[in-house]
Length: 172
Image (cartoon, rainbow, N blue to C red; front, top):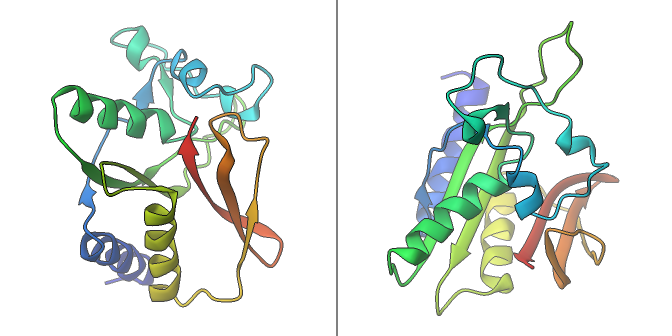
């Protein structure tokens, strides 16, 4: 295995050992999905790759964040009366760089949970376990109140050496 494959396998094994189930969603989303997560109109994340021949409006752009896909899947599970869902997806986001260049495609991890025994601290614990398994220490956790997608009193940014490596939050 390549170092990247070993890294991904460690993430997958850690998520599974924490009780999460893997999810695989489409990389195409609707531009309206950004409204659902309350993304500001002037956000860089709204600048996305537009599909030239989409199957429909629901799949007309490449996602710049995996949050809408995760929330849609959690909503579908909740509407189907599943009492709880602990899900994660290791997938790509597509960062638009202009019409002449291919987009950046960073691999990202997105987790989503709901259920009677789930709270902000449950997912924070999973994140801490993942960071421990990856050998990442001396990171900072700082409360954030200005992220429009998350509850202002239940959101934190995780950073290492001044670089943001994650966001943990309860959906607003």
